[in-house]
Every structure is written in structure tokens, then in C-alpha cells.
Length: 61
Image (cartoon, rainbow, N blue to C red):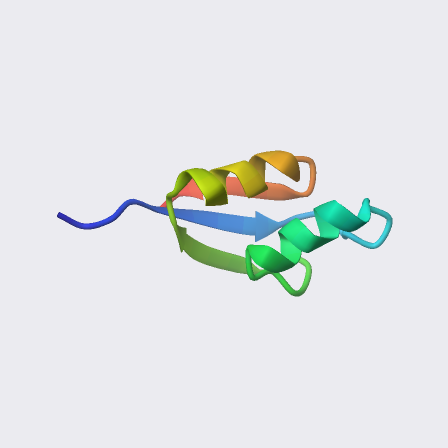
């Protein structure tokens, strides 16, 4: 059975964000605006995405 995947896209700049939120962006593997990464759907990844939900768009892959 294949693992579930989610696509995370950075839609807002982390320049003025809190330092911990910037670390979440980095932890998700996002480096620039409008970049999309496909990640395994785990509780830790979901938690990071939820913490910065005002900066990212999350879709089922």
C-alpha cells in the first residue's frame, strides 16, 4: 500500500514571520515563494503545516 502524500506550496513570504515559523518553512523543505514540495502525510508534517497555515497551501497529492 502506497503512503499518503501531501503537496505543500509556499504562498506568502516568511520574511516578517516569527523565527519559529521560519524554521517550520525550512523544515518542510521550502526555500522560495511558490515552490511546491511533495511530502509524506505524517502527524509531524501536518503539525508544521498547520502552524504556518497562513503562509502555505496544502493539497492532497
